[in-house]
Amino acid sequence: MFQIKFDIKLMVMEDLERRAIGRSGVYPHRYVHLRNPALRAWVRMLRLSQKVQPALAERLRSLGLNPAEFDILDTLAAREGLTQQELADALLVTKGNMTYHLCRMEERGLVDRRPEGRKNRLYLTGESRRLLEEALPEHEALIDERFSGLSVEDRAQLADLLGKLERSQQ
Image (tube, rainbow, N blue to C red):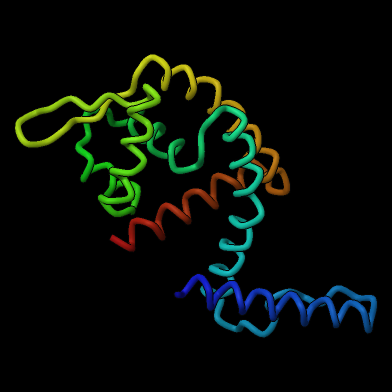
């Protein structure tokens, strides 16, 4: 529900900007009405994500993956042997959503579920490792391209600040 309200607010803001540009020929300062710096930062992060996600999804699609599957493989590459619940928790999704993706990925030979007591541990397969080796350089290149407006130092500072913010949410 929040996402729908946010999308509507963005559409209204964009429409107001288009009208202002049409009248004056000058591009107004975006988000000037948002006085809270945290809210301005939040809106900018969401908009940047909305601009980058389609390009990432298209590149992954060319490899036969979707963004959720890439996230699963990337997380398992760093932490093989997670249970489904641990993986769902790490990716901030429901267990049902995780089950859906893992069933599809297991059928395609991308994930290996190994029973351990009452739980299944998750591991990458040779095919998923190959896909990751192909996808990661393209993924990094696209992100580097999209962040090219920032210096290397600015990128590091942004990563540090976002990491700090993420840790504060736990």
